[in-house]
Length: 443
Image 1 (cartoon, rainbow, N blue to C red):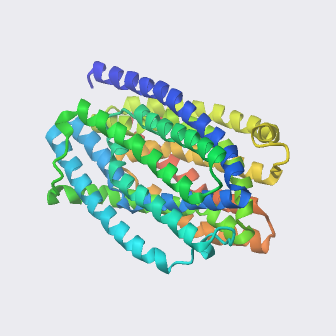
Image 2: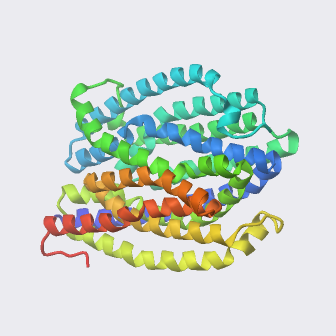
Image 3: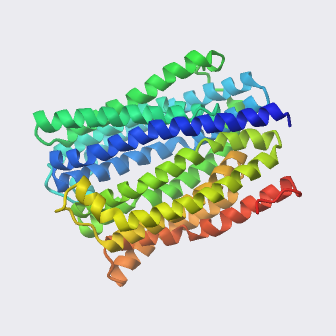
């Protein structure tokens, strides 16, 4: 392995982390500032409906059959092997396939939306049926367009420019903050207007990134051809990512649905505020670990296992800092929420503790998932994700209905469902690094 390749990979990783910290830090700050404005603009119940609606919108992203993640790995692999034409062919096929899927989903949803009781979905009569349907239709339309345009994030990851993904999120969040502030001061509370704001910000950020990417990497510009020989490699890798994403969807995004149905949308606000606070730690860790995905791909295909092991060791050292941060945040939560939202807004200690444990487990799993994703060795991750998906909802119902727990029971159920991954993913990484380089140990 040429020394200059290893050094450049490490230096680029550090540059991406620095850029991500800057952009993501500002994006997180904007997302925190917008929460109290949204609550004031919509009220607690409508805010709970809006927050749940965004969760449902996020489900659409998972209908790409894992093509985005498959594309990220295949483009990174092709570039590592100095095959830019192959990378361009994968990009062309991915854009064509996702465009067809997005168009089909939009047509199916638009007609199906008129047969769905949206007040039943959101368990509320505060917002009339027509307004809910309109808001969902607007948001889904934007999300499906972004479904296609958003492939740019996979490509930025593939060329190890992940800091720019955070820049796009910064644009979206700042746009949301400014527009929500204007809506609050000049209009009455409307979920439909927020849907337009959300969609425009989401799409605008990715369009700017797309323009930059294809100006810099002109040789990767797609011709929108659908090449059959590239669909099988994309889908063979992608379908496993898709199943993992689907399982993760159940574990990570059904909490708000369960809380809405079991306790009412007004309880989603407390969950959202606490989870948003602890998500800062998860965000910061993701800033550091996310650029490693395609860096691991590059190192794996160049057989630079010593670099992989060194990065894993550094990630494990960082995890100790993460745990300390989580513990401090547990003790500071009530004070921070009082300053941030207001002293009248109450959060329970049980919910705070359960969210803290959940973040600790997911951060641990993320360390090893990044390496396995980069190497394309996702089978164990696939099986453990399926187990988590099957267990999550029954465990939540058990915690609430049988043991009489509150909202914290829903979060605890999600945490318990992830324990298999917490044990088996590190074991798979250890075996993979040992088999690739017997003389190099992660420990």
